[in-house]
Length: 296
Figure (cartoon, rainbow, N blue to C red):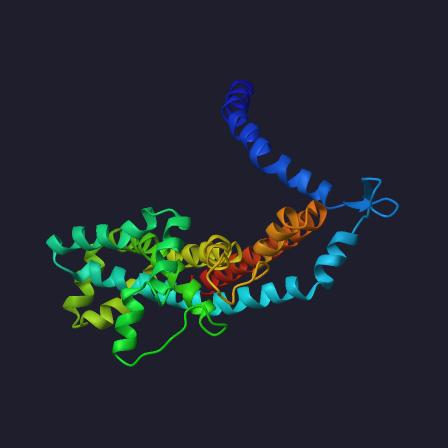
């Protein structure tokens, strides 16, 4: 028994060391940093001093309208992005599961390739495609009588959602397709023998068996949505877009740290966002767990 305990401790030690170094220590430092602020002494000529402010930075962040509006942007983003992502990835996976064997490989690779493009490069590509003076897409839309400003207040959110879909749709498609391939073929054959058509098999057999994968992808998609940063940051730089430097909570924290040099406020904003993500993750996990218990 002691030998097993020692072996388990030896095997778990690298994990706990890595966990402490890359997660626990940075989070602890961020919490500590959020309790302090920099104040100028005198008339601003005497330098700055670090002052303990307790929860003052948290109150400042929550009291800032820009920070609160950032969560409103995230809410709108999630309402638009999550259904499109889940529905699009699941629909394409179902199509691939019924496609010809020769076509599957090509479409898997073609749909997954955008995910291999770094987020910054993807955002730059789409900024080019959104710019009226440069984009062949915009010129084609205008030639067809379709006028849409991707950088306007109404077009900024759909523009960001489109970039994220282009990047992540193929990744989630592969997850759903792998789950579909793991379904026992005898179950599908039995449904077909019973007279179920392709649509009935998809909605009554396949999708219910993907409940675990749907819950996992949904959870990761929501968490990823809360971390929205790269795409709107690129759109906010020199494009004339309605996306501001505080458009999302992550951008607010970035602006507080590197534009205003207020690292305490940036840390507090980051902690508040992390707590929001943790609460949503807990809620989604409990919701999916309760559904599994009811269907068991």
